[in-house]
Image 1: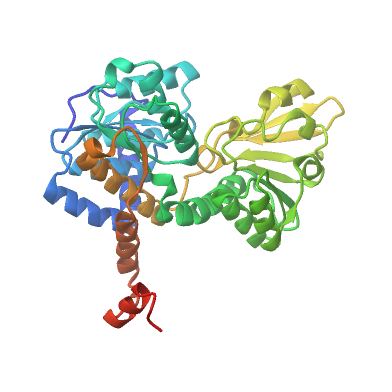
Image 2: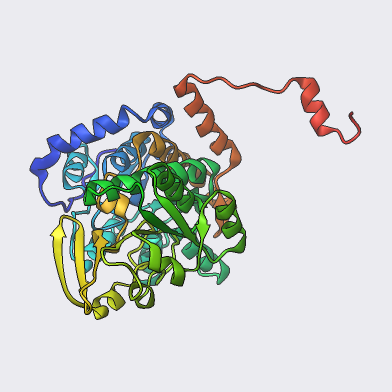
Length: 420
């Protein structure tokens, strides 16, 4: 359904370039294309409004168009000020989608754009980092009544949602898309692993081979970042707070150190924890001259820039998306993309083939919550395994890969405790 809402974007004349980007992405997203065909036929969102907050680039734009093809009136905004692409925004407006987003708005304008998206009075939500849900519950409770539920993209948002569920403040069901197998096994590991180094490499134009890379956090995203760093020839150090993950990193062949020790040896640092103050002033004080700090967590809180600024005597931009902090003793520390998501703020994000699976999960989860919101209740729920498997099977079909199936005898053997 095309919208009658008035969009807020930077430059409508950029639409042709944005359309080319979306067309390129959609041509490499066969799973989402299959879902679009089904949505066009079934119209699962007919007469409904959907609000989306995601990193607003070409792959996200195509998800919005797929939801629109399912009958929805769609309003979309960005989930990070530096990841929004103005040409993609313009192209979506031409396609009848309401867009409230600009590249690099100031903090207040960024917040205002999120609120404008919610003021469209959505029935369903797709969120990334929990911004829409948080504003609804904390500031705009007048808009809560009409929301049936939604889906959350990332770890940071799910942590927020589970905290809300725990204290009884969550007012509608949310599907934890990040916790689906086809999300964390592929998007978090392979998508983050590739896109983070794409962002770092295109921004710095420096060699990685032979350098020491410190990866803060060894969850699925951290695993991907470490794996790709190793493939680029780096010596990889992992820091962790989880003993099991630390052992896993060690057995995967990486050096495991506390951050106080890792700070002394790193050339590149990549934070991937979802927590704040992972790199603090006490760590920066011990870093090498020329150390490069980057973040791949959702919010720009993992590197404590306030403490870094307090240690510095000057700061300047030395290259697009690189800020140089000169410390009192003359050492220089570099921060990429203002400490925001380096793969999106300084790159194009995950490959289209990866986001194809993740956004297929988003589209199917949105349909699931719309059909079941009354029975789910005000809870955070996992993506049903059947949907996860549907995405994987569709992906295999697109790749031309066949797999085996169990015979009736094999199924009986697995189901019986007495069979031998």
